[in-house]
Length: 310
Image 1 (tube, rainbow, N blue to C red):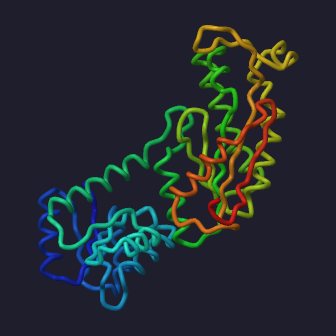
Image 2: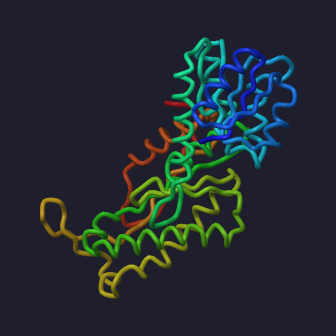
Image 3: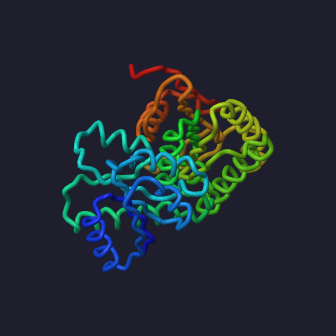
């Protein structure tokens, strides 16, 4: 169950919500005004904050933004409660760092559904890959949204191991684990060696990794990772495979083929050249970059420098 901070100036509604949440096993702290709500969040450190948007003095938008800017509080899940059902208002709330919203009037059962969803989301964010110990896609999406809400200039580097599948076909499960451990440790080694500490690494799945960096760090990080990878990738192959420059692997049709040694393809989406309001759009751009034809024998990185969709 969750510790919940409820901020709503409607005293009767707040008491009704509190009673319902407590009946579901949650711990609830209520504040009936915007002033002091952030300070109460600092004091109780809730798992979830339910914020009414239209508060006297300080709005729910402002509280949400302050929470996201606080390094101690920004992991809190935020649900906005609003009588403003217009889509622009909802989008604005999400851009201030909220995870979800609920339009008034609402049924208490719907509120419970939203609270349960935020609990599931929090659990999914805390899960880590069993091989690399990195969090998954939901965690990096949420981290991007939080940083965008704080107006941080950032870059998302989406790292893909080219020819990973043929390598796994040739080397088996042990080879797959070895390759994933190799790249995950290399990412940390390069990041630490360069003194790039304000970063967030995730393993969305397969042979793909996402690294969130401050925008001033991504070029040297990508160059450094590619250089280190190309220098050390031979460690995963036999001397004969390195000499000939390829491995023999069987494809899905049961046919043997020659496949070059693994290389890196890194796509970068950054908000120096264009405005991103959410992580979803950044990953759409990264998906477009992944479709660019690539030289599978060479490690490269590509930066999207478009100022708008086109």
